Image 1: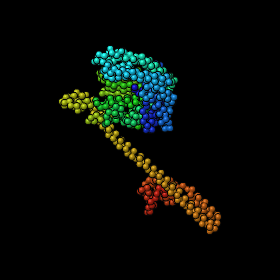
Image 2: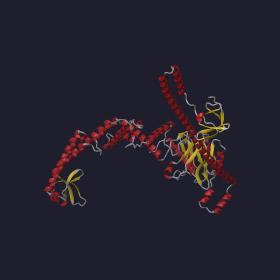
Image 3: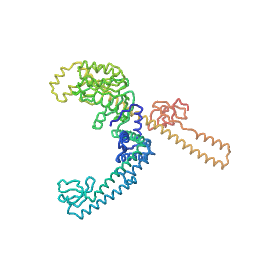
Image 4: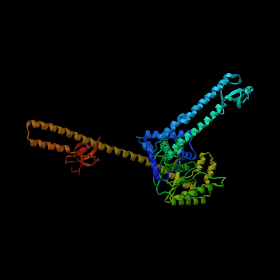
Length: 619
């Protein structure tokens, strides 16, 4: 069963929230699901009773939901399992009547208990009579064992003595040397046994009907819980996938910004895969990708399409955090060869059929992926059709990603404000990197050379190559090299900016820490001073000083204790500052280990930041 697309962006984001919550919990849960809600509904509607095996499977499911509810009742994931209903009475009913091997217990009903007891006694009586015959007339038998054939107990009589034992012949051995006979002495008991087995079967059906009626009474709840269990199973599977492949939650926006994205199958099958980075501006509706064969153009289309589809299904994607994707209504893809002999469909017709579906879509805001757009026909007409198709699709609000080798299409796109050229980088070989803004040449001759075609043939091919197109290819290659150099410089600059911001953050934290330390030191000093003053006052009281003098001293020191330290000031080299409490200004000439060297003419003074204030500050 495939994973369904979720039609609403809000519902997808709610799904992402649940996945993240489970992921943070670190819990791994395996949901037991014996059958689907639809299968359960059909079985209770179509049949008078459910088989014991099905009832036992249902019981296991109900027990598992009860276990989950109890296990996570007071934990973070409790809300995921509290929705399950309680089935204690139904569980006990099934357990009391059906054992672990899906057999009806003897105690399932008094009538069944009576029938089985009588059945057991009858079997014992039959076997006793047969044993007596074996012992008394042992020479008649090929072996001295009681044999069961077709539910009847018989004796293995030698073929030449078959007329010496009266009874019913049931069968012969393969060699025809032994005949299996039910002696006349046990036929009435065997008939009674058959009747008891019929009664047993009827009683078992009656018991199963009774249990099934209880199940039907809770049918809606069970169906709902089976549906929800399947939903939970899918959520935990999504969490497992995200953890296994280091996936992240995509963000929805009005443009593509894929950061180190991977085709999910390549991520699974290969280790060294070049990630896709693609930032398509919001005002661009068409991206035309060019470049050499085997350069990765089609992989880009498939990667973008699969990542978009995974996001619509509420799946985390194999890409870095911060990856932005639009939420598309539909995703259309024309990738591969649709030629069909059976349906009389040419390659060109197959591609047109797919493109027509995208053009006829009622709603806009779709993603349309077109591989080798209109290269199945003549260059001139193919270019014209491809240009019109891209323009029509973009005018309807769709986002189009197309691949091409057609130089005319590259020129057409370069002249449209809402379209953008891109290409797969090629140096001396394909690098599988997508370069936005610059189309790339196909480099067919270079690739052919690397694949072993002879030199003279390639030299002749170059003479046939249009000089203008050859020059254009050289320009594309030159631009790609320059762009790569710019990107390398940008990466280095980004690294320096990041390093600077980190150091700036560290400086701010150090300033804050120094201020806190200063505040604490000031407070501690003042507390010590207050204690000293209290001791002094006690001494003065003993010596009898005047009360007004004591009061004046206490008020003075109490006021000083309330004062807060001023925030440290960090001047620049060359700045004019002054020491707190001084009117004389000086110039900052150096800084070392958090202290500043201030020049007052021919006098130099080292000061801490909390001892400095700007010259314009009047305190």
